[in-house]
Image (cartoon, rainbow, N blue to C red; front, side, top):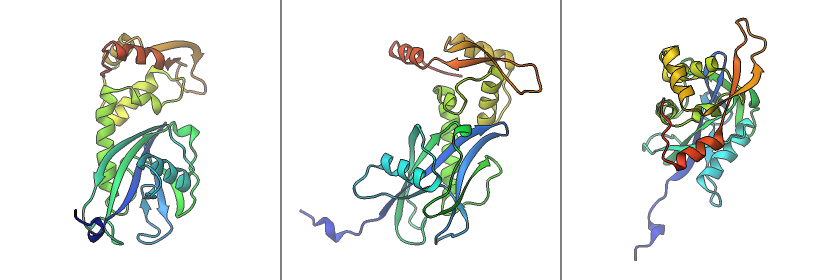
Length: 229
């Protein structure tokens, strides 16, 4: 049997792409690094995996430690292992992407992060390591997922208008959608529950608010239902 101690081992990290949504559009959470390498530069939150924790646990811990953000929707994205991706040593990173209701998550920088801030997609600063590549991959994954799964509701407030829902899809997909066709398709799934509430503090006519029926969606999935927009 080959002695495994004879083989050098790369270090293992996790990096997290956290998406949120506000009136300006889709946002991503970045930290400003406080330690070398790339001290003072912006990067995705993340760090080294401990020997006694799972990858998911490491991702959640790093997010909590560096930004104060605790997320619910977390999905593994891809493994990035270019030999020269980290100037310190041979490092392989497992990337994740997460979706949060931005209004409920005000980031607070801690540990080795000098600052934590939301940036609009398309207006992000230069990021350290290969984090631009990771961010691009996460955005492509989100765009594909949004069409096949109701993950967009993890970005919206619990009560939302049909206008907000369509704007979410347009902002993430990067293109305009026909209002009539979009509403016909969304309402035709019968997964939205109309509430007695209306928008407040808006310049236009206050629209009716809806909520997503998670339990009904889960029941339909057991019957072979496929969500598609």
